[in-house]
Image (cartoon, rainbow, N blue to C red; front, top):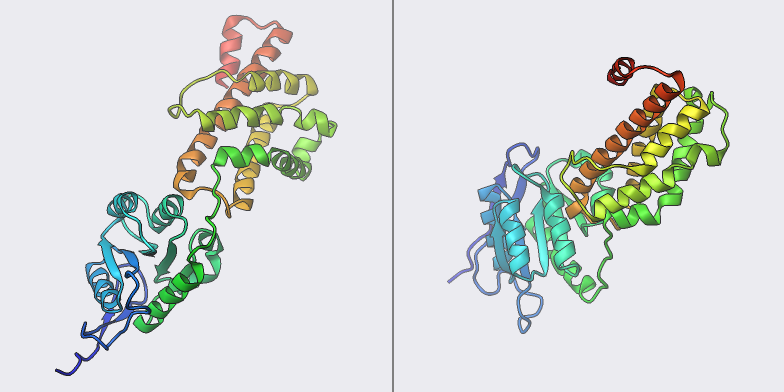
Length: 324
């Protein structure tokens, strides 16, 4: 019997721009050979919400000698990653529902760092802007992609990357603790560019003295999480409010400093994308915002109460001032 001829299929994925052009090929021996017929077939996890793309990739890779498992969404992919060991992850970046390709890639990196991870997207314009993903994935593939190219790339990565050392990932708390000095320096440089803040002449120590303790409280909160919105006294924030009042600050200036602190914290994370654990980063970012806002509120209350004590206002005037 003659080998079954290859059939070209152009698949248009919803919301993904250009289609993913693939071939459905016959499985007859000799049409597509494996790299090493004596070796166990590499296990590939294909993750795509588009049924036609997923099924065609299964056929193409299966015919090329790979053992293929497919998942239709992030949840199913995460379950499979926890239950099985895969040599290759081939994942669509854009999928509906909770999570996306970032989540799947990060989970694979965390569970099986030696696996080859390939992410594909239908947005060519994003190719150059995806350096951050490349820190977690081995390659970004832009659709359409010829099947022969895909198979060749997988084999090349497997041959090259087997036995590579595991990538080290760090939680956000560890990064912020390690980079605290740089975060404070970045914050100070940003503050120096704000005339509103530099209108009050302070030494670098006077201006940044509170930050070390605030960051320590933040990293502790990240390591010992509690529900968002949970109230807990920040001694550093209370002391900061008193100090800023004595130094001649206003409430808008305190709020601006807090905004800049969040910017500097997120800049630190941006600078450490090569090691950050993406599977946890979203929850940690929410915790950072919650903690910094909580610290800000306590600083404002402390600032206001100290002002009230100095001015000798009565209880009614104090409550009015705090509302404002």
